[in-house]
Image (cartoon, rainbow, N blue to C red; front, side, top):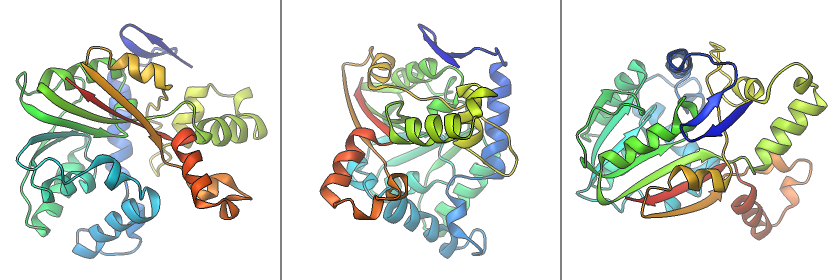
Length: 282
């Protein structure tokens, strides 16, 4: 289990923070986010990267482009924390942003350099830790991190670092997993925890680590979820904070998913989706 303190989320089993970061590096080094969508396509080709992009924005999360607005930051200095294969960072670059990315995983650096070269885009890519950013105060107009900061041991510290490197009036765009989601209560707690009996043998933290980010290496990285109020508290030092919810797939509503009308499906996604999208102003 996890508890929320003034210093952020802390695991009850007191595993050292560096070990959690090692696990994360192993997980996404072996299983870069989104690469399963490329199937048997040759690694590093334009077709390979296009398959990842098409799946992300057309199948998995078709709401993302409108909600995030990749093309709204022309000439702005933008930092992404945890860019993975660079799918989102590339969209910001195409929209005219001056992009920098940091990631714990050396393989991500290699992948994104190749990807940007294929599409003739520019960016700066560095090994980095979201809890300890290497940039001076007030370096960026925008800091973006989608589905990353809930894996770092001290999420509250990472969010303070985001604020530190933002210029006054700058915007943080951060996605954290949603505790109030159907994925959490239906898929993890009810299906895995109760029906399959995993709560009898494992903590909630262990179930999330094994089920949410499963990979070939079984690194079992840290996975955390947040309510709206908990997320808002993390951003309490920002001048403004807007939180929206999305990310629901029809298979999560089985056996009735295909029958749910689109307006009803969108209503459910915006209340019980897996993603909390936070937009906060420094």
